[in-house]
Length: 116
Image (cartoon, rainbow, N blue to C red; front, side):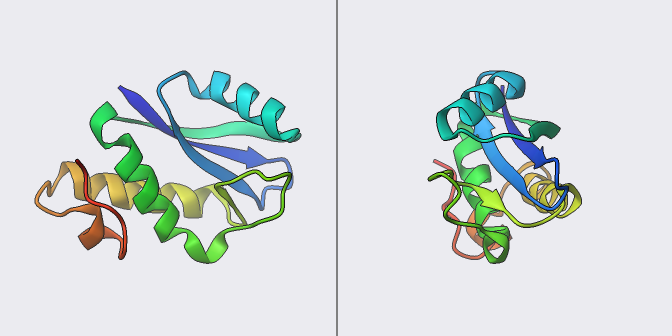
């Protein structure tokens, strides 16, 4: 199994949403070290099947597109929204994968790639 995770900045108005096969805590440490980011903590995690983690992450990022931030030490997948907004988007995408498997991420979130 893998995780989709939300890191929350201490400002409470910025999150990072990503996927990992290692523990979310370890991924946070690695990510923050690589991009010299401070003030982020693991806020919420979602266990997902390995084979869908990339497709779920892409669908979530497309769903959060209007919140995307750029220019933060070359860090990616950073959004100006609350944990709740990010979590609601993740839950919506996961439900479409698990409850209605005939719905691809393209149907769940416009423009997302289908699982392989």
